[in-house]
Length: 472
Ligand code: 6PG
Image (cartoon, rainbow, N blue to C red; front, side):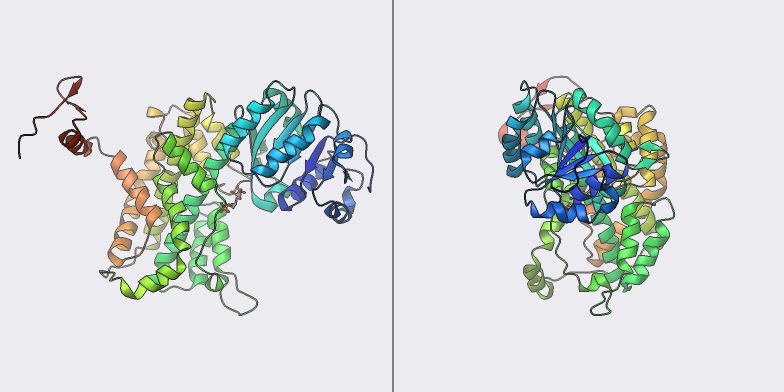
């Protein structure tokens, strides 16, 4: 095929949106890149569109030629759909590889599969890396945030290239080796869980302003634009502001008004939730966000139910912009706190020794959830953290203290007026549960023991006890 180069520093398999962008990013940083694709026809098209990298990139239609074109020990990045295609590719490429070579799965993969694939290659001399890549097409091309798992050997190979192409936060690359086997993919999955919650909460505030405030998309967009320059400064608030002010060229209508209110999902939010539950952790805000996407797809049912279900709404004054900004801030903190709690629980379960501060640091630029809050979260993790819980870090609890009443007002107004705010409500419920030394689980224990003699702990005497349920 076109353009022969000296042995390549890295191979990229898969020239879809993300693979192409990453290949160009590597080439732009001076690395030589061998590329290939399942549909060989794409290879020349891709190379022809990047004549500036004629000396840096080389395409191969045959897998064996592609492998031979890469410097050993080889680093081969696969940007293909997760699941069966990855397993099939490992089987196909394995016989062509040599001792010390590394296969990287840069897609969003279920970390359980990544652990299985790593274990299967263990002892073969080949290495498997699960690498989470965040930032969409633009991030991949100009600087993604990357969460790397796998062996130290693979990281030594990959590190200089990954650091060169990564997003930079004050000059520091937003990539690191976070732990063995599935650690990188797990951290990326939780990143996406936090992303789901943040996106859902932004949508809920939009909904309140649209349905209770009667505001037009552009007006709401301008508000997010203002927020993007304050404490909520973040990529998601910024793009929400821009999206709400965009106009559909076909109809002249606001873009968001021509989009059907049904949201799809590829699985990472759900995976976060499933793993959190398996670890005995609450991920109520992520559950709310995943669930809301599910409900959104029941469009016909909702249209039918709208005139049939009495809402019982009670008029209430719309919260102020400051209250809504505070609500978003408090809920964002709580969403991140739930995410980091899942990470520390997984770290313990799988013996990964995840560095929470480092994770927050590599999320400060390049990724979808990048925000100024993450800088404060990173600092909180670098300092002493009471009970290993983000919401108890002094700087974070102070931020919560000034913003929580805003969340309370927004949730209260939404509840009164019949506006659904599942993620914001979940945030408040979790906060209020954690903020009370005395909860109500004594009542749950009483019921369990009453009907099933499950026993309970007493406040005054240690050990397992059974009640005298003689009241009826
Ligand atoms: C990222 C994103 C990305 C994800 C999309 C779509 O970090 O760049 O998380 O990995 O694929 O956001 O995800 P859903 O289709 O599940 O919303």
